[in-house]
Each structure stands twice: as structure tokens, then as C-alpha cells.
Image 1 (cartoon, rainbow, N blue to C red):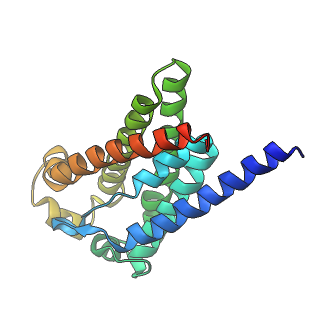
Image 2: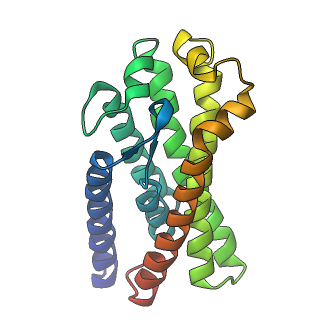
Length: 201
């Protein structure tokens, strides 16, 4: 193995470990919102991993985010009131909603960055859009699967209070989603650009 190849692998493994550690910290500092949801910035490490290591990195850190989110249903690494209420309905469906969706988000974020990068889009713009896309996909998949998999439960019917699916989603995540997407776009754009300029990715 060449020295440069070995150095590249060490850098990537170190970055993965750092991003996973950041996810754990972010899992403990979520900002609670009504309806058992919370504002979360966990998609930022996922987007950065997708930028730095492509689909494998996005999938790994996306999976780490998903696993932390799933464990929060049991009061581990933070707590999710909604998750705790719904995990008893079906742990398998909750795992799909919390874990599988985040793996997919990481993969899609990597594809977004690769598509922009191949078109010669400036690094900062590509990283910013990737951060925004990661947060957007996370909200889209999380809420879609929440309604599809758990919309029939009494807990969800009470939350929806007779509103249609679209009205419920907008009311539940309107402000959350906007804040998450803006912050993810700005931070990912800055961090991704810095890593690129430092030749760390």
C-alpha cells in the first residue's frame, strides 16, 4: 500500500469517528418542539460524510444517525417522546422509519454532491446544496414514513386531530424544517469548503 493511500484511509477513518462522535453529542442536545418532534442538526455530519467519502460515507454516518434516533425511542443517547410512544406499536416499523430512511438520506446526499461536482459547480455551492438536500430528504422521508407506517395508530390520530396529511406535516415541521435546512446548508457549505481547501477530502 502506498503511503498516500494509507494516509487517505487514516484521514477518512478519523473523519468518520469524529462525525460519529458529533452525532452522539447532537443526539443529546435536540431542541424539543410540539407533537413530540424536535429540531435536529444531525444531518450536517451526514452531509459532510457524503461530501468527503461519497455514498459509503453517507450511508455509514446516515446509519449512525438512524441508530441513535432509534435508540432514543428507548431513552438511550437522548429521548424521543414520539419514538417512545410508537416503538411499542412495532419496533420493526420504527427501525425502518428511524434507521433505514437515514441511510437512504446519506446515499442521496452523496449523489447530489457528485452530480454537482461533476458539472463543475463551485465547491462551496455544491457543499451548501448538499447540506440543504440532506436536511430536506431527512424531513421528507421521516414524515412520509411516519404517516404511512403509523398513521393508523391512536397516537398519530390524536396528533393529526382530523387534519389532512399535508396540513399535519406543514403544521408539525414547518418551522423545524426551515431552520434545519438553512443551518445545514450554511454549516455544510462552510465545513465542506474548508475540508476541500485543506485537501482533507
